[in-house]
Amino acid sequence: MADDVLSQSEIDKLLAAFATGDVNADEIKAEEEQKKVKTYDFKRPDKFSKDQIRTLNMLHDNFARLFNTYLSTYLRALVSVEVASVEQLTYQEFVQSISNPSVIGILAVPPLKGNIIMEFDTGICFAIIDRVFGGQGENTVKSRVLTEIEEAVIRRVFDKAMSHLREAWANVAQFTPKIEAMESNPQFAQIVPPSDMVVIITLQMRIGPVEGLMNICIPYLVLEPIMSKLTTTFWVAASVTKEEHPEHEEFIRRKINRTSVPVIVQMGSFDITVQEFLSLSYGDVLQMDTKVDDELKCIIGNIEKFYCRPGTAGKKKAVQITRVISEGDEGTNG
Image 1 (tube, rainbow, N blue to C red):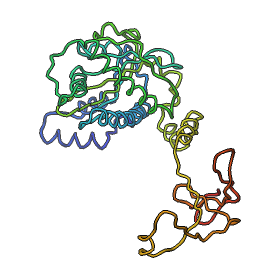
Image 2: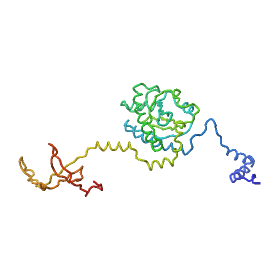
Image 3: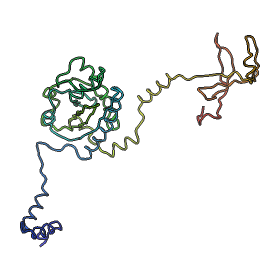
Image 4: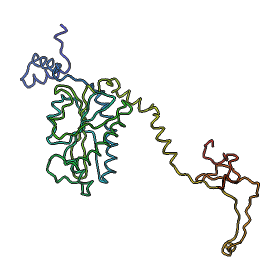
């Protein structure tokens, strides 16, 4: 009968068992069937698929790079920030895994509903504070709650981290993180019921000789409206065909408007010898190669861009642009 047919792996194990004499064929077949059973805990249902976990990993890889660059510049020290793991847990399990005291920021992420948590090891925070205050970035302080001055320093780091988090998520969801509160005791940071599922992004941080962890806790309820976008296909497509945002255009426009560009009007030129140059004195007249009715060249930066004529505007000297010089303009259209 078909039910009595053994697989190739069962045959191999059967031959090995016969050689030793410890196991019979029925026991091997029962063992194979037992391996096909997968346990499922209804108290901890999987809310995130493997593809969604992978997408979250890629999103926060980008965040880690941005945050790494900021901390390296801000602290002027060797800094490393890398994603260590992305996993789904119950909120209670996450809270129990955090040390007390810790540095916990409770963030709102409008227009998404609910809160997320950004948590730092106290060791990493004290290394940052030591570096900001002129030290070597060492953690010589016993774990304790931050003072008001220390908290003010760390809030600046939180602000930058939130800015980079928003940038890293821009292709998937637009939100603006805002810090609502800071806590040191994890038990006081209850953003969802203990049994609710959350995704925990753990980042390994190294500042000089000090190592520690940073955790980002995002409840399923926050991500539920955008779960369909948490796929590698959507993320890659959004990265390639990223739309221009009006705020980016306005930012670039303001930058350009504030940029200073030198403008030079060349009245003419002439050639003289070094001997003639050395003998020049006050009142000498030099004849240029241009005539009164000739057009002058207007140089923008180091490029001859326009022809113009000299004149006045009110009591000020001015030039009037007559035409555009298109030759040698590096492919621009004037």
